[in-house]
Structure formats: C-alpha cells, structure tokens
Image 1: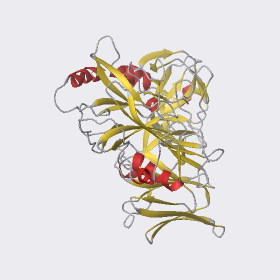
Image 2: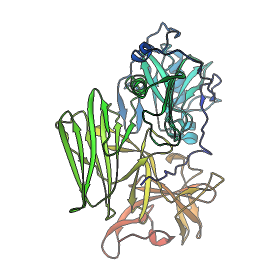
Image 3: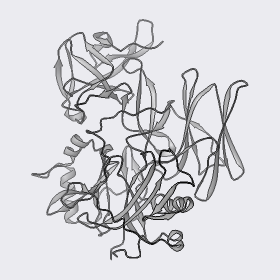
Image 4: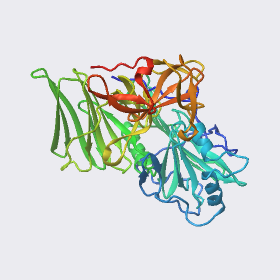
Length: 500
C-alpha cells in the first residue's frame, strides 16, 4: 500500500535541474557531462574527484555529527570560529536586523525554513550559512557578497535534491534524483565563493519502465559505460561513505530475499508467510546470526534501511493487519548481536515520500478532530526512532488548481468563534492573530502536529488553528473535545465523528 503524500509544495514540482548562481537566485545548472575516459583504475580509486581538479590551498572543514530536535546540523558549533565579516552579517541576518534585504524570519515565513547551520561548502576557509526547508530538498547555502546575504546554491525540487560529501578533504555538492521511475542520477560538483561550478562528475543508472534496476540495465560514469557492481561501488564511495551532512535518509527498500552490504557486513532479509494460524515471520540474518519477528494476520508490510542522524543504520518495518491494526518496529544494524526489534509508540503504514525521496512517509489514524487519517514525512532520529519532519497532513486534503486553497474534510462553524488565524500556510505560530470567524464559515482540515492542534484552511487560503484538549464525552470516554479552551466540537458541523 503506497499512498501519495499531499503537502503544501509551492506550485508545480520542479523537474528541471537548477543549481548555483552568483546573483543569489537559483539559475540553470551547467554541468560538464563531456566524455571522460574511465579506466579500471578510475573506478577502483575514486578518492580523487578529478585528475584535473582545481586545487584549493585551504583545507575543508570536517563536520561533527550532531542534531538538535528538528534542526539538522553539520557541526555542533552555533557560529563560525573567529570574528569575520561573514559572521557579523550572518548574526544580523539570524536576528532579523539586516536593512533592505530578507532576514531569517522572512525565509521562515515564505519557505517554511525550520533550522540553520554552518559549513565551509566552497572550501575557502570560511563557513557559509545553511538553511533547511522542505522546499530546499533539504538545504540551501548562503554567503555574504558586498554585505548582502545571498543564496549561492541549494536543492531545487525532487529532481535536484542535495547532499554534501567530503572527498580528499574538500566539500562537494551532490545533487541527486532517485524519485523518478527509470533513473537514478547523481551530480557531484565543487563551487567557488560566488557559486560558480567546477570539477563536475556524473553517475547514473538508466532502467526504463522499471521500478528497480538490475545488471541488465545501463550504468554510466561521466557518460562512459560501467557495470552494476562499479555503479554501486562508486555510489557508496562518492555519495554515502563521505557524506558530511548528518541528516537522516532512506538508503534502500527491502523485499523478501534481498541482501545488501553495509560497512563490510552482509545482511539478508526474508519475509516468510504461512496459512496455518496465519502469520508472517521476518528473518534478518548477518554473519550467521539470525533475528526474527513474527506478526499474526498480516495484511501488508514495508521495510527500509535508513541512516539516522547519529550516523547509524537501522531497519524499519511497518506492518498492517486484517484488523486494521498497525505496528512499527526499528532494529539497530550496528548492534546486531545484542539488538532486538523495538516497537515504536505509534503504528504506521510506511511508504516512500514522493516529495522528498530521502525521507519515508508514515501514515496513521488520528482522533484529534474526529476520526481520520494523517500522513507526513519522517526521518530517523536518535536510536533510529521515527521523528516527524514538519507537520502531518490530512490524507483527504487536496490542493485546488489555484494552488492556494484545498478540498477535503470540511467542518462548518455553528456559531461565531474567535480563533488564531494566519495569513497563509507559511505563517509562523507567532504570526497568528486572534480573529472572529462568523457562523457558517467553512474550514477544510489541513494539517496537525498529531498531538495538540489542528490547522484548517479557509477558502481564501488563510489558516485557522484549533488548539485541542481532551475532555470526557457523554459516555465517559476521554476524547479531544475542547477547542481553544472555550468551544467544543459540538459547535461544529461536518466530519468530526469518532469511530467506535
């Protein structure tokens, strides 16, 4: 069961490759894909990105793994070391003190930026500012030019997501597209202070009309044919192993009988079902050791290997049952001998997030404003546990063609109500203003944190927030009944019923 994640992506999804530009706006990436002769030595030794690389006298900055809540970080340092003009401008930017240009809060409001960090992405000895947003897939870098904080590069849509690798002590941008059927593309490039690109490399697999590639498909490195094994080796050594961005990402989806190698150890995954006392047994095997997990009356399962923000690899298994029950398990690959399958607090249905292939989408039921279903993008946090990356969105919500308002589960006010209202879906919590909404106002269930509030969308695109708290109903059950501390769900008409 694979569902489509509906999120507030601006306009149409951008499928073209667009990259760094020196004027602060993202422009068209000009990647050097001219033929480069690839020898066996080139494939076996990829530590040097290019024999003709432009050498830099400054050493790259080695990143230390770290994270703080949802703010993804390259290093544990909040500021670049030592006073410099960039630090002064970045401090003013982050404190919203710059005049005549955008500040940090502007990007929070407009692009849903949720965190920042620093990394010497252009290898010039000074750290640039990285902002994280779902729209940047997942990051964009900013530098200081003539006192202005300007974007020099970043992810752009599902066809140009961004990782950062470190090769020969230099930080390298890796743009990749693994979301579209029939291709897996990786573009590696270094940039200068103004975002100019050089030392480009291209790795790709082409497997038309298939979901997964195999040895019969076409594999290229700098437009020269290579084998499947060489492709996998290059991808591991250029993309995964040298990665310095410590965010979580999906490494591979698993099906019954799949085997894979991580850190030199071979793992095998099996899902064996029987009709006698219907159940499914998952077997996970490494170096002769076996771990098992058995689930009764299984209807569907999904399994992924994910890399967590602590740099470790975990197995995620989500199961759904004939009784509409859901379960979610994690397993620590590094501690295979002592690790056991650990059940998460919530059960989920799991699927690949169409808007961010580095994330897994999770789907579950909710009763925060009546029974319904919500889904969102998750990453693997500490100890491999799933952590929500942003909001969870109501599964029935769909944007209309104007891209501003949506359709889905509608509730109607039965009386005038005062509630916090944001000017659009990008408004931060601090920007919501108490507003009187007249009786008869229609609202569409849009998103939630899954625990304490629901955001509903008005016809003009404004967002109304219902802070929800529990109270006992007429049968004595504790349910989410109280809205903003002074109204109840009885003041609403529409889809707010609870499944018994």
